[in-house]
Image 1: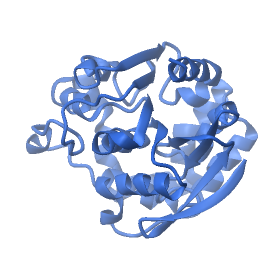
Image 2: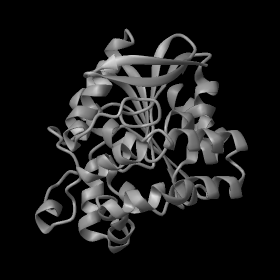
Image 3: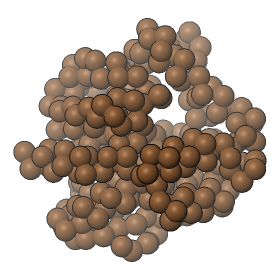
Length: 287
């Protein structure tokens, strides 16, 4: 597995890659980084050129200042330029959490760049806004996003050797046995280089909390109603962040969709249940 950089959209993005062939591009979420895809990188690199990005502001990627550097249009353009910069015209796109928000928006805007989309616990921009308007459980679960927009959230995450982030990511992973000591150190290293402010900048651009905000149909601007590419959803049903009702009626917007629910997985099935996840991905890719 090699570590490399690519200059796109005016900044340097770090990525890990392995294998040759068609491009399989992985986009992580908060507060993760490329390492979260380690099991999938190893699994699929015999058949694909697997590339896992550190999104801008994360881990070893550049961390430009200013909220304007983390607006959705900028994040989407990063992905378009990465695909072309790696020498491809399309890819299989695998996304999670914030990476899913970017990935859904990218696929709607540039469907010709996405052969297939595989999304982990990152709701569709239409169904998420619907649930924020109507689902009290989703409203409660999303309160953290409002808190992330405040300075106290950054202070909490950074103090005492990142205790807030450790409670969120590392402690559950160690307790359940899917994070090793090496994994823990990799996460700690990724947070020690000034990432917290830039990671939170993604949330500080969100406008989803006023009545006017909630009247919008989509979390991010989408020009089309329907996405016609093949999509596989892999969803941990124990996710405290995104309620399972986000999947209700999704076929209205994504008619060529398959959904696989993992009853015992939480927010990040790709490293909680990697073998089951990989099997589902293979079944989808081989259709």
